[in-house]
Figure 1 (tube, rainbow, N blue to C red):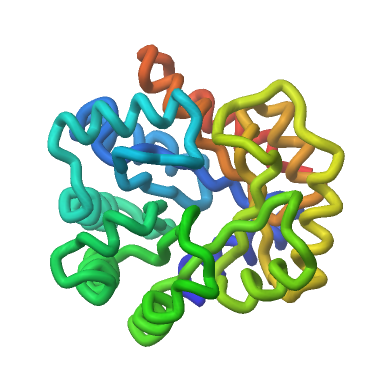
Figure 2 (cartoon, rainbow, N blue to C red):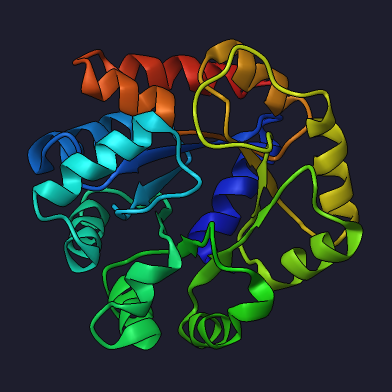
Amino acid sequence: MSGRIETAFAAAKSENRAAFIAYLTAGFPSEPRFREAALEVLDHADLLEVGLPFSDPLGDGPTIQRAGERALAAGIDGRRTIELVAELRRATDKPLVVMSYYNPIFCYPGGEAGFVRDLVDAGGDGVILPDLPPDEGGSLIECARSAGLDTVFLVAPTSTDERLELVAAASRGFVYAVSVTGVTGARDALPEEVADLVERTRRAGAENVAVGFGVGSRETASRVAKVADGVVVGSALIDALAHGRDVGALARELALGCRR
């Protein structure tokens, strides 16, 4: 497990709160603003997910889809995403994790090994893999393990106990629990099944379980923080960036919601 990710979750637990995990799309709305926003958010977040733009993001709702399209149009690819991670690493000691669909990793110069090597060299702590089943990701998991890079896989309310055990065994850092059977996007309420999913994932062997998809306000963050080890927020932050609102202020409110 990455030392920075482990430390972040341990610190949150010691303070009786859930870790606040923020997501921003690499290079959105522009490279300079992305860098500024990332540091504004990291003033309050425990960990930053940097989304690698992809042309067919099946798990993302319209807000993150539009951000990805704009970043792709500006030339943000896998290599540039990792370069942006390196720039952020020079400015923060907090964990930085890339969220990427598998295709950009497969097509990256040098393939899986090249992606892992460059991300580790850039100071990245992990990679979240929303569309790669762990039972089909053996070579990437092995490559990441040998390099000290955490791999984070997803579970959903529909996941069987057998599947939860498989994901927990393949994940390092934390397991990403999807709160709804749908795509990303802020919602006013979250399903009651979230607590059950978190508990089942812990029983399956996960040390840290972070819940995402649907969290977009201090209130929803507070509800998730009561049951999960981490709270993931993406679309609400991207929407704030897209409309020129104060992402730092929003991050501060979300961080307050992560307190128990």
